[in-house]
Length: 249
Image 1 (cartoon, helix red, strand yellow):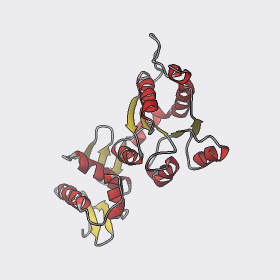
Image 2 (tube, helix red, strand yellow):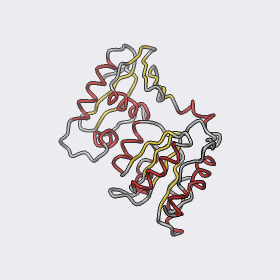
Image 3 (tube, one colour):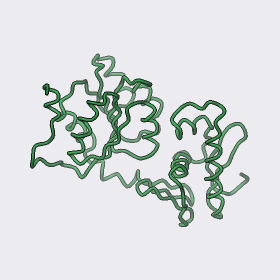
Image 4 (cartoon, helix red, strand yellow):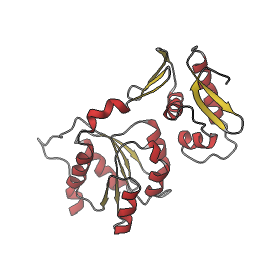
């Protein structure tokens, strides 16, 4: 075992975490390094979601909320810089870049895009942990404000993944909940089929796949079943938006 692997060795007996567990999304295409980081963070009671490429990352950020993201820059199908720039509005938690790109320009670019820190590989695990705790210190007290979405009579609990309209529970599938969350994050805003396809499926729309239309249709029927609630409106050839149910759909 080399020096880097030794540094990422398991915690010694009796060593404990100072946190009750952070939800962390790790974007790293080096599977061996990813396994070491996941083990290290898991031993500190973190709940780690792993994405090996940009496509998996896009799906992961839409399916749950995280306390922090650790992201590589050079990926097999994307650039970490491009992903941060593209999904900046959907990423509400701190992001730390962890990359072999070590020039000052690379580090400055990452920070200018909104990353809270930039670490160069190889990194000592204790330094990574210190950066995580420094960026998350005190954020737990604000967690409730980001765990719910409210729009008119619609309320969504992102932790329990439950939704209600006028206090009446909505019985949604996983796909339907994910789609409703996307709409509720940007209420009354027109969302194109292409945008929804990228968010839900994780790749570019090919112009033929009707999966989004079918999912919107099923979700719309469930929303329509509750009077004076919210409704999905469609504009032919342009997309869909979530609005209060007053007015024509």
